[in-house]
Image 1: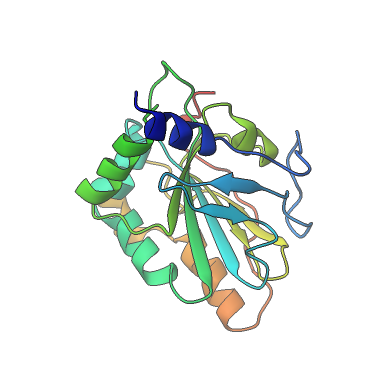
Image 2 (image 1 turned 90 degrees about the vertical axis):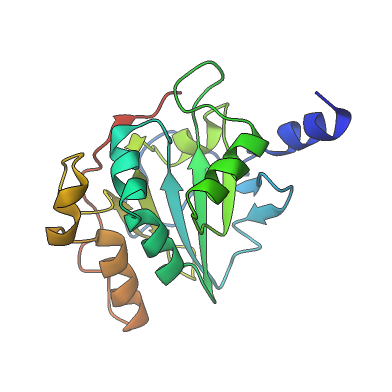
Length: 201
């Protein structure tokens, strides 16, 4: 590994100002974070104040993640929502040697090969980021409003199958939460049970 790659790998580790170890109730302030993505760009709770933040926990080898990427559902949701004042951060919390673990360059290759459109991809091999948010599955989704309040957490949609054919008839909870925010309304469904593969901490 070159010095540059070593530095990038080290920089991609997550550092938290105030790590939490239990589920943060919807409606409370979201756990603080400070991270560096796979391209060496820093993102933090402080720097993202005033923006809506969507967090997506992912593992490219999980059949439930494959469901949403093979159908382009996740990419289309990213492209629809991650623009302007909305930042979408995909998080990979797989530990070294476990399913879904990738290097920064491999993560970038995955993003390109799937035509994914997150604002950033963050590696979390220590599991610090995931545990701070009590992330359980891939996918596991979170929406943080511009004030830093956690307004949605749970599944991406209402159908727990791994079959992509079920997507058109499902309610996309992330889109619904964002529509409520855009309309200036409280998020009607703020907490659902996530489904998918367990995160490989």
